[in-house]
Amino acid sequence: MKRRDFLKTSAIGITAPSILMSDDEIKPNMNDPLILSTWEHGLPANDVAWKVLQNGGSAMDAAEAGAKVPEADPTSTSVGFGGLPDEQGNVTLDACVMDSDGNAGSVAFLQNIKHPVSVARKVMEETKHVMLVGEGARQFAVSHGFEEIDLLTDESKMAWEKWKKKRREMMPHETHDTISVLVQDKNGDLTGACTTSGWAYKMHGRVGDSPIIGAGLFVDNEIGCAAATGLGEEVIKTTGSFLVVELMRQGYDPTAACEEALNRVIKKHNGNLDFQIAYIAIRKDGKIGSACIKDGFEYALLQKGKNNLHKIKGTI
Ligand code: ASP
Image 1 (cartoon, rainbow, N blue to C red):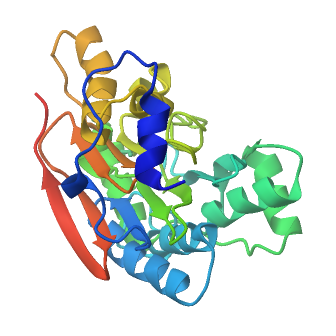
Image 2 (spheres, rainbow, N blue to C red):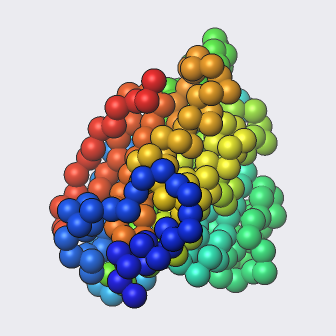
Image 3 (cartoon, protein in one colour):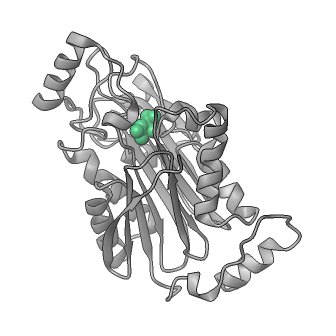
């Protein structure tokens, strides 16, 4: 079945706002893979993911390889090595992956391991579980050959020491950006990966949305996939990424689905929000969408070999 036919079929019997797409909204060539990532660090992530696909790698290989780029980059202060620590100076990492068969793996509160996304994939592929946390996740990683390293760089240590003197609460959008990589391969199959060091100077033990399947990331290969960045607590309370995918199932356009998921948060705060949340989404037909609460969010889209950064206007 063609993707377009699929969507027509899937919309039958559903009372939903608008949406069957017009022909010009559909990806020109249905066999073009596409890669959609959060933030500017998504650009190099996309490039690497694209190469993996071009070399015959799977969508999961691509998503993982993409997420590993910012994890290894010490200048990316929101992810992996060089990520800003918690209030006690520990870098604690959250990550997850989900594939087109609905398999998922996740790690949370993981320390001293550079590539949490790869550990999450190992959890998915080599255990009966979905999620490992903290010391158990670290032991699992080490037993699977992951090297232990100090994730604090001179720069992130200095930033933390400076913060410690004043202890001003930082909002996630000031310093933190989860990198999520959503991939649609040439067969139209969807996969995603998500990785972060979380809210800067958070309480020791705090876990955000990023390792929680359905909150930070969700993939339903029949409908679409979505990922979140921003204040994890609010994303968890609204099961954000799952909600975006479910709204697409009901017929919402990908951007409308992202906006509606944000509305659930905005309404609760009576529009008075001092934080950022952004969603990105790919619908099964290859249409992408995104929305954010505040100006400042950007996503990187690689399509037809072109990789571009797109700035998104906030909804409030
Ligand atoms: N969502 C992440 C968290 O709450 C942080 C971010 O993306 O800004 O841990």
